[in-house]
Image (cartoon, rainbow, N blue to C red; front, side, top):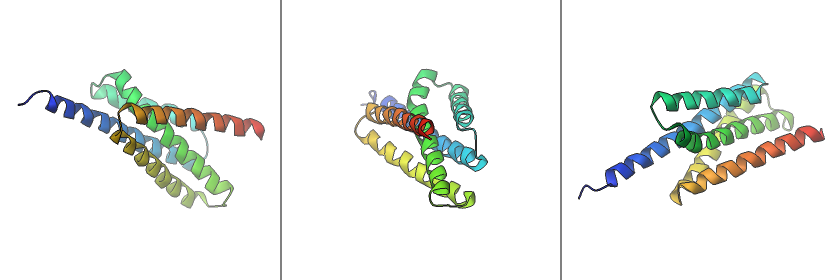
Length: 146
């Protein structure tokens, strides 16, 4: 009785907190960058710095926090920015409507991503990293082809 279960539960709570913070901060940063209309790279760097600063502020191990929170942060940032750009360019939505819709879509992507934690702790992190690399590659390819 009273073995390591409370410690393990606390570890899962910390993992979940970093994942949720990464998703929310990424969607918010994506919305801000989309609303301003420029600076995706600077927005990503700023969001990552804010996230890592928060991890240091709460004396979390920086490498573990970065591994858990940065991949979903990048995923939701890119999802929000890409959706907002597509809604504005393809469907001719005004920025006033495209940015909140894109933020909502990024939050849906982030919370669907968090459902992968039901299978293992490594799976969602791997999926987010693969998705991030794929989205960044697609962005680089689409910019070079135009």
